[in-house]
Length: 440
Image (cartoon, rainbow, N blue to C red; front, top):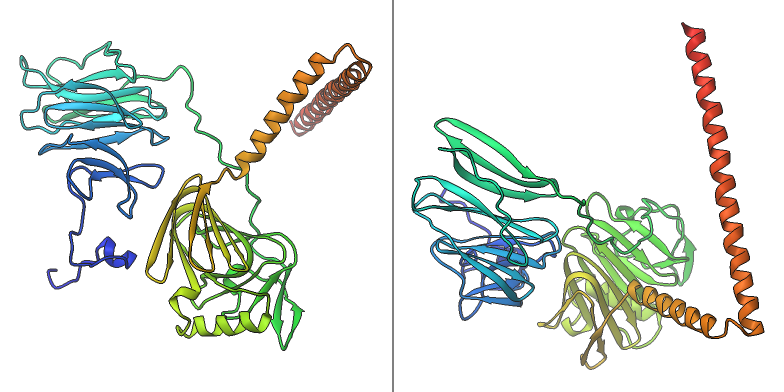
């Protein structure tokens, strides 16, 4: 229906003029890190970019009338297929390129989840059929077989089970698996997080100049405009596929009429699985009347735009800290956009920004939970070196003796646990067998 209005991504984001282009130029390939590969916003070529058109990698002018792309599970390795060549990139470096022949029928390309193998189709000059080729990330030809005679390769694919291709002969379609991996691909483990609660009783609310204990509350049942205090660290389930919200003890917060969190004072860590908005109100002193007044103005859309922050994200884990004249956003994964009085700051994974009362921005590196792992690793390394150097001293011998005793105790407990489990398991099996015999 031509009478229906088409909402563009700019309309939905509310950040640009909706009359500009509704899409991207060239190939469009979405990656697992919430970025995409498409025509560069400026100066042509192909770029890895965020949905806000921030260029991350410029791959150069590898485009033609026909383009296709695929990437690995970690969004690091990328294959680009044009009408004349296939290119493979590791990060922002081109690892290799191969000629392809295209006479009209579409070609395809796919990268294995671990980024080790690339399979792509091409035509050959001697036959009217498409074939496939396989190359490794370090440019080694691994094409050990070819499709049956007179079968045309219409599609290639790589997934966590192996490499595959589909052929067509007359009216028959066939799907083949070329081979499987010797080791299963295991993606990086995500940072540990607390299990979210659907309800909590660890909240108080502000009313008539004093705090009152709140009954059990779910996130969706929080009252718009009420000021809540977290009596302890809590992790709230935001419902469905929205994700979770960790709230630090003594944090003050509220929600608007759309159930968007409003951070007044303290710290929140958002682990969102879908696009969300969080607000944070600026303050220069701890004053409950000030918080209530600013919150009421904000809800009535009468609070000055430079008195609050709008935090927008896409499938992201990030931390917000709101203190006197200081607002901090630290991003663990994904990308976050912070808006304040028409000024926009974009923070990517592993970065953080601090904004002071004068809206001066400072950017720095954010390690998050990785910092504790690094500290623990360094401590273990230093301890090991010191124990080795001083192993012949009295203190060193005593420490080593204690560690040996602890290790032996752990091993004994482990052996006893295994033995106990075997006894219980065997007894349980015998009881089941007896019951089966009685029924017969």
